[in-house]
Image 1 (cartoon, one colour):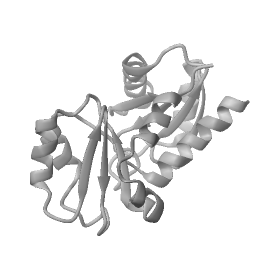
Image 2 (image 1 turned 120 degrees about the horizontal axis):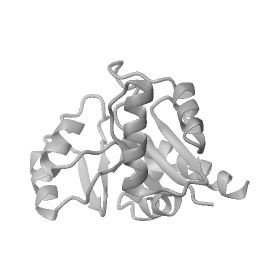
Image 3 (image 1 turned 90 degrees about the vertical axis):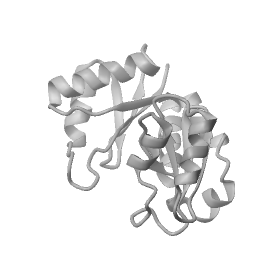
Length: 183
């Protein structure tokens, strides 16, 4: 059984792009997948998938636009890649002490070192960033809501799209995937 974690970009955040998780689950089932959602922000653990990575991202993006009228990006990682994302976290102290202000951001492609340096130069506050493969990790010690380090700033500097999840959600998705492995 292959488990995949699929994240939708900018869904049910700030009221601009809304999507019922029941509708998302129904679409997933219509496509022949077994899926569970977590929270209202577009987090899905898919079981028994023969597709993965970019191929699954494209299928979900096309079908979500066609069936649900929503054009958005999907970011897919296998359960193994998700475990690696957790292990690669360079901000272990923040993960333990302040997980709500640590964000893991899956990216469409790996960030170039020069782009990460440009992003670091654009930081106006106490935030810190680190890139590992196709993930960016961001600490927001003063909170995310008031930070000038927005998704738009990050994507512009890195030249790729991403979607962020706080560390609590990252761990909940890992736990969901683990439970699915045991079934």
